[in-house]
Length: 448
Image (cartoon, rainbow, N blue to C red):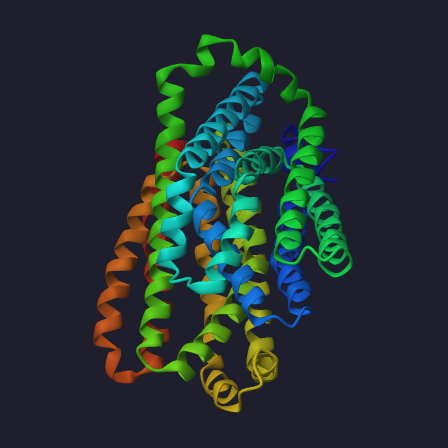
């Protein structure tokens, strides 16, 4: 299985399909488990029947997500670099990557702590939190903010383990952390009576537990044994290695910003059409995100396996993994799309008791079915480009697609909400077309 077999086993011992699924399936389950993380908080605080408290937790969680998600490149970049080093069989470089990435996470964590007094106030103002909600949201944020560094370190540790194909341990860690999180939520909020502070402590406690579990898992990997020695070696901190790490993470950071901007434009354009359309689009977006979380498992597989093939300069293996990832991801996306067409209206109805909102969502549900298929190509190609270290090309295709998306939003405005979702679909189509266009040249350049 994945955790037992190292990269050296390659395709000689496992078929491409089996390799892809050995990473994709645990990654899918991990994504779903992670998505449940925030639902526990909202459900428990909702049992108190205090709308202000529930609103404060929602705002506080949004603040922390916005603060930290832009640094998710620590995980993605670590996956890519580790997989490439594993593909070349270089344990010393794997250890050096772990050391450099942990140092970057600690540096970012220290910076966030230094700007904490300003960041919390500015964030609450930006979210337009007022009165009792602002006071309660600050309580939540002040507790969670102190373990932000643990979240950053977890990104690195989980990315390093994924790059080693040790995906199952990530799934186990998420399940254990979620179980503890829910238990703490129930105990601290409903039994001890800590309210909002209890929710924040439960979340912070599970994040710290995750850090301990991931640290133990990393320490058991042979390549990690060189990490302390790597920290003392000048080669680990040489300019070329640091510039490579910086450029990779910079590109991933820019991609995240552009994706975030695209989603904000989607929300803003929906808001301009009134509260019913805005609420309906929110439901549709959550349904779309569900399919994305599932299909992203193939992105993780492509990152790791294409990164290994790039590291070993094995073109045949690279192409086989690419084709297998695309085929299985497309089939999965197609199945999800059909499910959405058949049961999407019923699914949308579970998100609201407002008939106008659910009817509006039902009338546009076909777009989520289409996006379930279109999103397949973006996910897999992103995994390929990140795994192979072609992040600059990925950012360029994202920037080009954003330009088309913004223009389409304007040109399709007369079509109303259908025009909005059409423009969003074009974002995915143009990104995929750009990546398909660039891919053959990049393969010839780096893999011969």
